[in-house]
Structures are given as C-alpha cells and as structure tokens.
Length: 295
Image 1 (tube, rainbow, N blue to C red):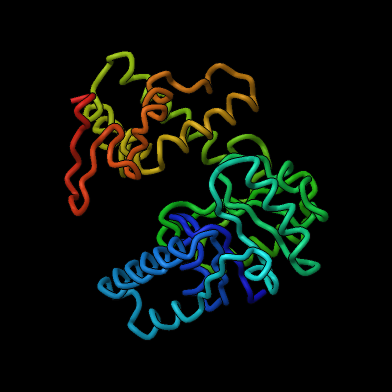
Image 2: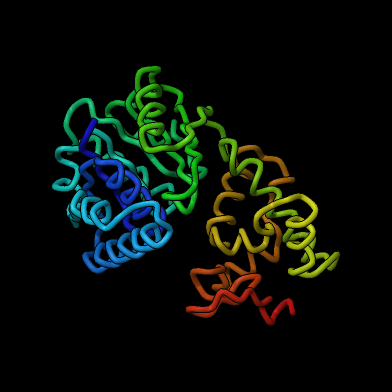
C-alpha cells in the first residue's frame, strides 16, 4: 500500500495528508476548490515549519513531505491509482453516501475505502458501495500530525483482512490504533459528547460560568483543556451534529443537545472557526477571553 488519496483538504484532511506524506506515502489530496487546496498546502508547510523549530524534522524532511503531495479537483483523477482512500469531507451523511458510491465506481478493484467520520455509521456508508467488505472507519484526532489515537471502526461487513491492514498501516504512521465496532458515536464521541453537552447544560442552568466550568475540569480532572474550550476547538456545529446522531441512534433523551448549544449554532457562533463561541478568538492572539454573552 503506497498510494493514498485523501478527500477533503480542511483541517482534518490536510492533517491526514501531512501525516501520510511525512511517512513516505504518495498522497493525492482532492477538493472541489483549487483555492482550498492551495490553502491546505500552506497550512501543511506552516505545520512542518513548526516541527522544524521543535527539532523533530529538518528542511529536507519538509521538502520530501511536500513533494509527496499532489492536488486534484477531480475525484476520478485523484483516486484512480489509490490503494487506500481516506474520506475527510464535511460531516454530512448525504454527502458521504454520494461520495462513497462515486468512489466505488471510479477506484481500482481491491481499493480500501476509509472514512474519517466522527459519528456516521460505517455500515451505512459501506452499503452505498459495490464492496462493503472493503469499507472501514479511520477516525483520526485533531491535530492529526500530533495526536496518536486512530479509532479503527469495523462496519458490519468489514473483513478481518481489511481491519488488520488498516491497524498495521496506522502503526506505520506512528499512531496507536484502537479497533471498535460500528455503533453511534463509536467510543470517543459516545463518551466525549455527553460530557461536553453536560458542560453546556451546566452553563445554561447557571451553575457556573464558562471559565469556572473549564477550570474545574482542567485542575480537578487533569483535562488538558476544559470541555467548553474543547467544544469551540472541535466546532459547535460538529458537536451538535454528533449529538443528533447519538440521540437519533439510541433514542435516549440523555443525548438530547442542550438548547443553548442549538441556539449558538443557529446564530453562527461555532467556536474557533467563526471567531466566537464560549470564548472569543482574535487572529494572532493566544489569549483566551470569555465571550461577551457569558462574561
């Protein structure tokens, strides 16, 4: 397995492309917009520069990594020679099903199709393809070049051989793969999102403020960042989408999204990506300031 196609050049997509390319794989990075692809390459170059400053790589490694990445705006062209396709498109069920159906038609026989989805059923995604046995989940964590975990999600039809191949491939990337079965939220988000949702409820009900809630979890529970800051980092729209998957999948009211979270997403306060969530974000500033709504 040498040729990797990554679909989607956003935060997760460019991180996945960076990681594969840095480990010597030939990477085809695909997006519908050339400007998005150029932005992704700039992001990857900037992240490689940070690695150089830390002494973890040198200039030659940076050059080799960037040379391992080619960009495409056409899925058929970008995935034609892929041994593995990793989809990292937007977390939207209809988009993913349509994309996997297309990949099943244009890729060479035997290709493994993986999704970086954080919550959508791998079994359902696989059912849209001609060969469900070769479909699997590879749920990377953000930031991909840094975080060690990869959730490897087996769909109902995923074979032992495909699972073993992806587990070993993840180790080649320097990751720690964990095999899980295909149920709503898998492991990471089934546990994480209810915690974030409960933190939002704690704010919504006036138990404590944003800073206080995050401080309790950081200092009392040794979390590297508080749940509200983490929600901003993930994207409040993404958190809401995952909670809806959990709520619909299990039918349990404990997964129902907090009304405050729903209102914030509706109002366009999505966290870091929009400049405002539970905190407000200014370009170039590392200061964490509670948003005026909650100050």
